[in-house]
Image 1 (cartoon, one colour):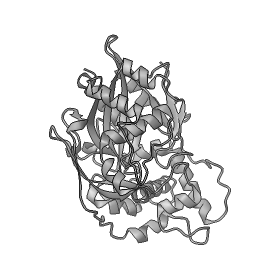
Image 2 (image 1 turned 180 degrees about the vertical axis):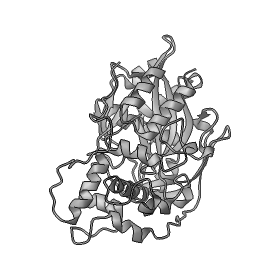
Image 3 (image 1 turned 90 degrees about the vertical axis):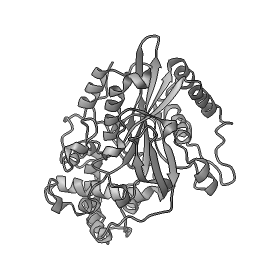
Image 4 (image 1 turned 45 degrees about the vertical axis):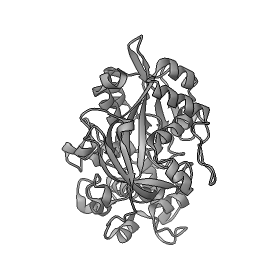
Length: 399
């Protein structure tokens, strides 16, 4: 079965004028580094991972994790307890002054004071909204019943930290700052320090799901992939990823939805419909949160889960070494008949990129496929780690 194409140069960092930046003045310098970051995310992520101890890497990939984030065996999604607490402000001493070095210079256009504002003004992706999120504060997945603690957050909070640090690292790779292997040349990254320290920075949580179509009669499983279009997304553009992946947030910013949607499965239901079926984003209303029981797709998938034909698991949690994007690593195994009923017509494209199904219903869930995929295609660190962990626990996940 064919795999996604590798970058034409094997993924090496390269000096280009990607995007044909033609604007003159200081903003052009920012756009050039931003373009370089977008084109070289995979290799830059691999280089950034070397700044941190190898003992914090997940399953031999570049994803980073606190040891408490990696359960010894898959945890049923329903066993993960969620709690909410009051807001906290990270102590990022010196950040407002240091971040100026990675923003467009004054006089080049709109005056901005944050990285998200710079993206909105000079390089706005197709999907870029400062919506309310559930900000992750603490996580422990070592026990049979894992725990995740949240407070209120905003999408741009983590963008302002992670994309600014990624921009700084890309500038260092281009030679505009000190060697990226040296901390003195990376003041923003030094302020963040340990990216797995969730209380030191704003950390929005993405729920990354490996969707397995399990054909028990044939003894086979397969999975689709997603290519994230850099023109449409603010994070991980140009990389391959499992799907669906979605920010853990309510369907609307209304207080009722914030309570109603504080549930991992409901978040995943909305993302399944959007990314695999190409449905419009499901949004609640101020006066009426999403009715999951009245929504035929959500009701059918949840019924199949209750009947044991769909199983949902958590296999870990990790942080991207380049952008500090934080992903809950989940696996949803779907009986082949249920998968074909609900996802028999996978879309080829959605609001964030292209959906790849190999030859038919997906790529074979085999050691050879995973090895070739991780060696030959620019995979997002979270997706690479998720595939490795899923294969390691395949008997539990597909049994």
